[in-house]
Amino acid sequence: MRTTTADRSNLARFGCALSAKENLISIGWDQERRSDALSANILATLIYNKWPSGPLLCLAFEISPTKARPHYCFFPFDLKNKIHKNYLSHISRRRRIELRFLAGSRQIMRTYEIPPHRFANLVESCGTAISALKGFPLGLYDFDCAVTEFEQNVRLVDHFQYALTDSELRRTISLKKEQAAKVASENRTRATHIVNGLLGDFRPQGDSRKNVLKKIRMLTRCLMICADLHGQFEGDYDGVAQFLTDAIAVHPHQEDIQHLETTSLLFKSIRTMRNLKQGFDQPEEAKAQVGADFRDVIARLAGGQGLSLKALGNLLSTIGVPLGQPGRSPRDYSVEYALKAKGTWSKAAAYTLENHADTRKEFGFRKYPTLSVSEKRLLKNRVREGVRSYAERTGKPFPPKEETQTTTADLTTQ
Image (cartoon, rainbow, N blue to C red; front, side, top):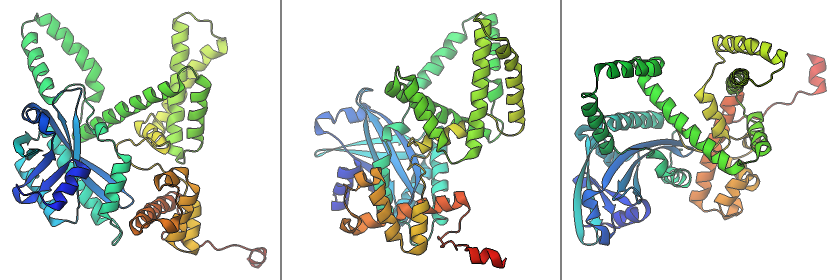
């Protein structure tokens, strides 16, 4: 194999490189661990994100010689690059990915057979990304900037959350089936009844299967965030209460707030019922309130203000927690909107750089004129998409237009 300068650059930056002529992915590997490449467990997933610079697809790998030491790498695909699109079509047809581990002068070949559930994700992600590119403004797509944004915002390990590997899960399913065949029929009947009771309400109907799985993944992510908050505020109830109060108070979407109010009311009712059941003294008005609260919950559900994982996900996204589609948190771009309406995107980007702490830190606390051309383009694209989102949320026109001021004289003439 002849390694090109581009290959060496990709291997150094991403950990792997596309060998388009051979339709395979080359992965950099430690020469002293070359034997591990033959037995390592391999997982692959296609990650889709929509960044201010444009939609991006990345093929990510987790390669685990042992569970304690997984190796991660990824390769980003330029959706306007014909070679990259042809390769994605190739692995979609073949349903497998050919891999070449480069360990010094040695090459180890492996084949990753894409499991059905991961293949469905691959097809869906490709379709979503291509559709997003078609709807993206002409001339604004910047592949290099999108890759930089991916690197600065996404943790690959977050896309490989599991308790059992595919092979371990298959062995467990086979073992339990073999063991269950030997138990008494009444045990199986009882187990069937329990399972139907637990899963009956979650039985997928048609295309709802995908939605159920997405909700499960979001719930898993939410629980992880709860654990993070517990670690940060352990023993500090007032601190976590203040933090959540601040987060909800500044959340811009009232529909999400209504969902959270319903959830809060339901939790309050359950707590009161639990205390009554355990014999805790409760005021008579509290006992009477339980029924009223439940009636309120039912009314809210009937009115479309019910419980919603989406509402929780949206709230967490505003405090910097990427759920589903990792990315930047929504923020108020009203000033940038006004600056662009009166001037240029450069002025709006300079304001963001000067007034947002995370952006100043990202660009090394430099002034806008000192940024490189690519850095200015990255920042302007990000601000442009932020302003676009702000305009959609507030019903303002885009591109930004300067608002006309109504004077006293105007009012007297109306």
